[in-house]
Image (cartoon, rainbow, N blue to C red):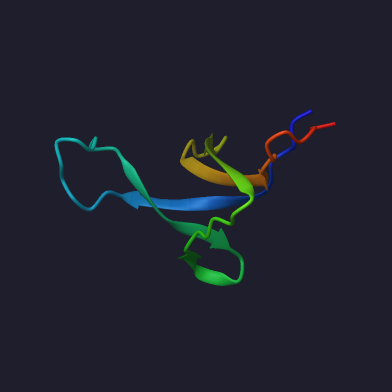
Length: 82
């Protein structure tokens, strides 16, 4: 059985500041993670030994797109997931 992801945080994004023919006009960049203790987004630190998943979430009322980052302990090669 796979390990569950946990510790989800909301990710703040912003429009890409530069124009390029290789970057879609609606592309976004990650500014940081939201935290109750900080008025500004906090930089994201990825820890070794964890797997991360970033997924899109649409607010049911406003239909705004939000992003969530989840982490889980990485499975070691040959380790049983029992």
